[in-house]
Every structure is written in C-alpha cells, then in structure tokens.
Length: 457
Image (tube, rainbow, N blue to C red):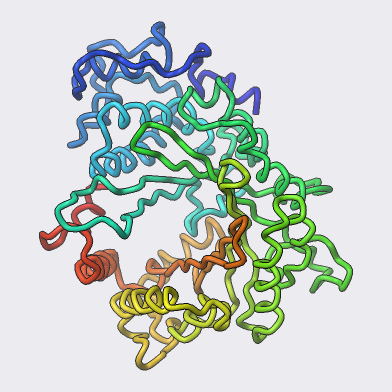
C-alpha cells in the first residue's frame, strides 16, 4: 500500500495540510476551480497548461473544468476519471451540492480514489462488488422527509469501491486502506477521522480474517458518504472467507464465521468486544435463523459498519437466502418471521408492498408469484459475459441487511430489490420509481424526471 500511494502515476503528491477556505466569488470559473483545488492539493500543485484540449466535454461545467486542468499520469486514472468521476459529478450537480463542495469531492476522487480502482486489464480477480466485475457502486438516497417543491437539496450522495492495486490487480488490505484514508496525507482534511472511528472495523477484520493466509480470503469494500458540508464519512464492508470445500457445514464447536453460514452464534464473541448491548438483538437473529426452513435461512454474505464513534455505530449483517423471491417470502424475511411486529412496521410494509407491485407486476403481492417464475432471459449471451467477469457475485434472489444498534434491542431491516435482473429494462425501473415517489409525495412533478436523471449520469 505504501509503495502504491507514493507512486505519482496514481496518487499525486500533496504536502500535509488541511483544506483552507477561499474568499473568491464562488463560481464555476477556471480561476475559482483552481483556487479550491490548490487549497486541497497545495499552492504548488501543477495544473495542465492552458492549451490542453484532449479532454472530455460534457454539460457538467465543474467536471469539464477539472478534466481540462488536472494532469492524468496514467491511462488507468483517465479511464476511471471518466467512468467514476463523471457520473459522480452528475449526481452532485443534480443534488445541488454547493459549488465549492462539488469541486472538493471531485478533487478528492482524483487524488485519493482513482488510484485504488484496479488495473484496466484482467490482472487479479474481478471485483466481487458487482455482477460485471466493476469495483465501484454509486448510489444516492432521497430522504423520506423531502416533499415536492423542496428540489433535490436533501439528497445524500455516496459510492463504495473494492480497493485494488492498479499495478498488480491484487486486493488491497482493509486496515491499510483505512489507515491511509484517515491519515493527514490520505484524508486531505476532508475525511472525518476522529479518535476511535476505526475501532469496530479493526476488531471485525481481526475477527473474520485471523489466520487467513491468502489475500483473496480478505475481501473488503470501503464506502464514502458525502455530506453537503464538505465532509466524508467512511463505511466498511467485510466478506467472510469461504469455508473450505472439504467442510460442508460448521461443526458444533466451530468458532469461525464463514461466507454463507446460517449459524450466527460465533458472532457472540465479536459483539462482546464491540458492544455487549447488541447481544439481545443478535439472539433474536439467531432464533430466526435456527427456526427458518433450510432454503429460507439468512445466509451471511457481508458484515458492515460505519467509521464513526462506537456509541453512534451499528453492525449491519447482509444476508441472502438461497430461495424465496415472492412477496410473502420478502415479508417473512424482512420481519424475521414476524418477530419484528409493530404499527411502524405495518406502515413500512405497506409502502414496500406498493413499490414491489410497481416494480414486479408479474409477481404481484395478490398472486404471490415467485420472481424467478417471471424471469425471462432477454440477452443470454450478454448475461453470460457479465457473469463470467465476476462468477462469485450472486445475481438472483433477495438481499437483506439487518442493523444492530447499541442500546437498542430491536433489529432494523432493509431489503435490496434486484431490479437489474428481474425488470425488463432501465426505463421500466425508472417509471416504477417515479410512480412510487409520486404516490409517496416525494420527487419532482414533471413527468420522466427519474429517467432523465439516470440517462444524464
């Protein structure tokens, strides 16, 4: 990791400093963009000469200006600048982030993220993060309290990557990446790195990977949450190592937690170290996993947490049953077999059922058909190409995550709906989401706004 971040082809050298404010008029002009970048990368940072014309021109003024000004010293950096920074810039622009904040975040991506996006060729394993092997996933959240007329100002913008060395294709070690990103050199004064924010991540990584010799057994993602104030909060995601093929199931006394396990009792030792107040919630999860029928048991895929103070943190367990993709199955797993039962849960389920029926009318909640029954392989050769790049990444079924929060005995569930697999195309997805936001009283009023935003990104 140290040799990588000292390689100027991927990580521009920046003298230790914090971000300083600029008193110039805030605009998208070249002079203001330069001023903000210099406040982050240093006053001696060398921009491209003014006659450079080999850069991408879009309708995104800040992205275009940075593309013209920033020097790219490798084809890898230029490639991922266009593949990651451009849609990210579009999201920041649509969400109406302050101009200086947009410049700051795009500069951070240029200086500290592109160099961990992996090689352009097929060196090393494909990323587990996406079904096509891409090492990045962008997303945003439209908060539930945003009403018509509020515009896009309430949106939360984020993305996650699987850090990979662009020179060798080898996976980068989780704690080395985190220590770098929270150091003065790696954070650029933008990443929140208060004392203790890595405690849970360090403990969890040691718990999952102690004794693992192969780097391929230590798969790790890092997420970036971008705030309107200009700060970044990190999130970490750990995939448990796979159980050896010679061992079909964990023994009664096995303390090792492995990928796709349905026995959550080994987590008790981890939670004792993280926060013992999580134990009651874990016991509810253990009860659910023990009593669910075998095909519907929650198989563990990822453990995740935020890089925040211990008392404000949460442990997230991502789980994927091997079967069960009807509305009844989703409702059952979402409520842990009815264990999560309250008036608030009833309201959440009612809204989720509306979204489900809009996205999957062929598996409407009233007929309770399985999603796989309506699945039609539209482009078999294209799907095979995608799966070949990341054969380990699941493409079907429903994914849930359950949050355990210190000081609470409840579990907070979320569900990922695999629209890319079960919906006909992006337009169908966009139109369903637009209808849902209209019913829910959120979003813009003009027809087609979701599709336009997706296409512009």
